[in-house]
Length: 67
Image (tube, rainbow, N blue to C red; front, side, top):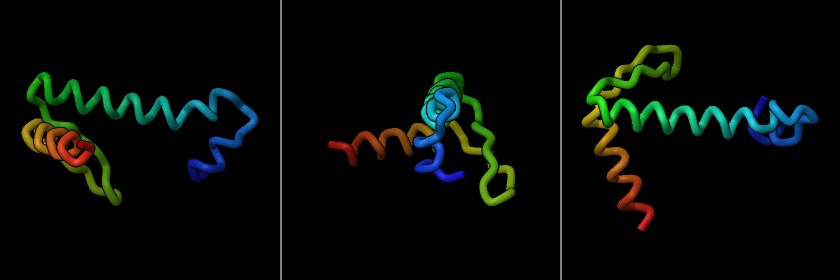
């Protein structure tokens, strides 16, 4: 299912699930930065560890580009 399909689902929990997943991902990034731990994700079927420093730099870059 793509995001457009989910947004039109009849089940309200399913419609809200994409937003909940994004919120959970943002909280996981924030927690990793605060605790100085790596964030572990799967990209293209590969396990990837993202350091807290990399997350900090990405967050700073995102904030700078939003201005």
